[in-house]
Structures are given as C-alpha cells and as structure tokens.
Length: 145
Picture 1 (cartoon, rainbow, N blue to C red):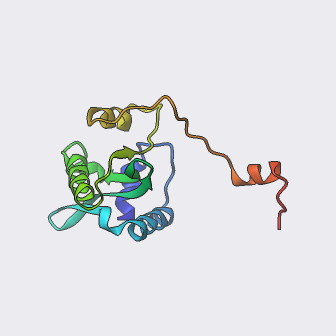
Picture 2: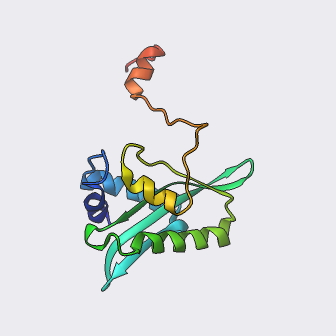
C-alpha cells in the first residue's frame, strides 16, 4: 500500500514521501479509523485506497482529513470516484456525517478541480496555518532538553 501511495503522489504534490514515511502514515490511518479504510483491486492486486476519519462536532459528525491515492497506471479510470462512493456510503450508514472537511493544494489544478467537480468548495472563512515546532517552542521560550 505504501509503495502505491508514494507512486501516486510523487508527481502530483509538493511533498516528497518515502516508503517508510508512507508506511507510518497509513498505519496511523488504519489504526485510527479502520472501518473507513477501503482498497481497490484489479486482478487481485491493490491499485488504490482511501481512508478518512470521523470527528464529532457541534452540528454532528464530520468526515475529516483523508488520504486518497490511486496507482498512476489506473488513474483517470474512475477508481478514485468508486473509492469515495464506497467510503461515503459506509460513513453515512455508520456515522451519519453532516459535513466533509479536507485539505488540498491551492496552487495545483489537480486535485482541487476534481474535488470541486464532486461538490467540494473552498471556504473563505478559514486559512490553513502551520509552523515548525522548533520555531514556536523558541518563541514561547520552551526549554530545549
């Protein structure tokens, strides 16, 4: 699974995944929300997968985050859509989610345009922020033990 994750993302995003890092991420997801992890096969070989989480919120359950990836040889053949449909149907039956939140790259046409075509939209009220932990720790005066 990690091998396909690395292959699927190597030319699509600004991230540089290694096999070990992909294994750690996928292990996290499979432990966090195993009932919302689905794979797609062709000739008994894994060709893609999708995992997503549930987070309770004030207005009901939200689908959050998620990782969707398809082997490059099988992209643009409906595999991602089928994985999302299967996942969504299961999530609706088990958790009755009211909203789906996720992140994607704003400066790349794919996958943002694909998500918009299936009903996602950008929200103006939020901005994703991040910082190096070492920078925040230094600014807060945390001890470096």
